[in-house]
Length: 432
Image (cartoon, rainbow, N blue to C red; front, side, top):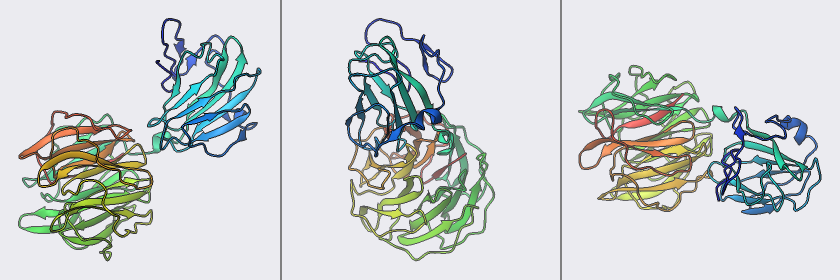
């Protein structure tokens, strides 16, 4: 069967599809695309507990927050209905784009079509109200809108910067995941550094190695992707560290040079002095945000490769080691995706690899996913487009500029031809 994707009706077999309105709603002869205000509908609805199952049966006059974090949900509508019966469904965890809801109209029509059609909704944050009109049209969506705060979540653009050479060159990433050509470098040329978002819409590169010494200086990135000159270093100079955001608008640099030191970054981009380390000191580690406001450091190398992780609270507190899940390796990269989840990818076990490990919105790391794209390590990754990610550059045996996009479901795509100077040991972050 085909289906409704978001609110678009597709048909198995022949027959009219209907005309789309400007908001993507299917227009039928009944309603002509007009919507009843959501608050008017929801005010008379009896709201139920959060539904997390893979199937459920809906009852007229009720509202259902549906959490599809773990699975799709098939909703069976009532077998009989009276004119004016209304149901409301809401994307509780903003996960319908990852795991959709499927409407089974249970013998009644839906937007004038019989139940041989498949009706699916797969837009994050959707609020859906449906009302039974008559036997001809059946159930019709009277509200089919994204929540208003959806565009504000997740930065839209990214930046790769610095790396082997040593260079301070940067490459911007558009909100469509397209990597731009080289931008003339600003700041001290170096590699083995880290980068993170801060302030909700800006970024910061920090630390690293540039012959002949480790550094602790930082370079701020504006919300237009412009890199500023060096800021005097704070904290222990080191390399092979990682960084991620936390608390919604702050950042943290951590580990590196076999240390377990961390340095918090305020929402104004100010780096704090060293915080006594928690967890196993290591280098060649990666980090990303998860759960909207928390972070995770993972993998790396002591005298041997490791796979343990360390969670970061929304107050920037690093937790003790979590037992390793997935293949121990060094030099991977990590970024967030899907608004509230993360992904570790690539690295070296002694041989270059391309497997990935997804991170749930609760900070749980999953087992290995078969690798896609050219195996490599010492690459970088960043969020883009609000809910997607990109891995880029790295060492394949020689430096590369290849990239691999990550969908908002955490699926890694095949190689995209590289743009910009091929290099490794660089860093990346997002901005808006």
